[in-house]
Image (cartoon, rainbow, N blue to C red; front, side, top):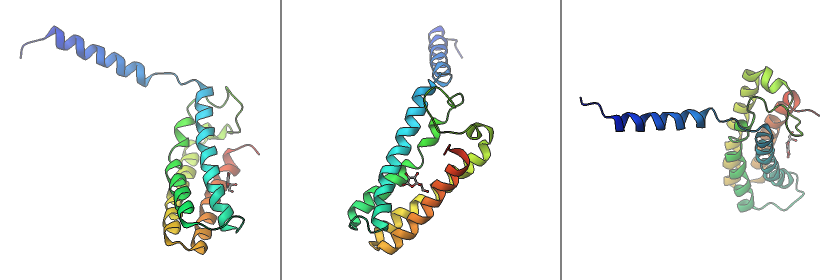
Length: 152
Ligand code: ASC
């Protein structure tokens, strides 16, 4: 095959761009704000479901389904923000254990992501009792992680 300098140069440029993107340093402050934003949005929508489950606000199937769907999707997102070095750089309640016990932290993430689809299923039934059960299960996953990985 004929060697092309043009192709070789193009390949090299693409390689350098990819390397610099993957090695890009994310500023700790940005990562902290990202995860706090996602967790805050999740708490916002989970709060609506909790409040309906407790009868503090009127049960509305459509509102519940919307918030349940958001929580399910958001439950996959905070973890990207716990990048190395972001144990400080802005006020954060993340405990050093996040980075010292990554396997356990990952288990907690997976427990949450496994529980959140139950909210959507429950909200789809239109039965507030089922929503209450799912809220209990997801709230338990929030708490299990907070107990070990979040400052009081
Ligand atoms: C919420 C919220 C949390 C969880 C947690 C459940 O509504 O913001 O962090 O529930 O308190 O134990």
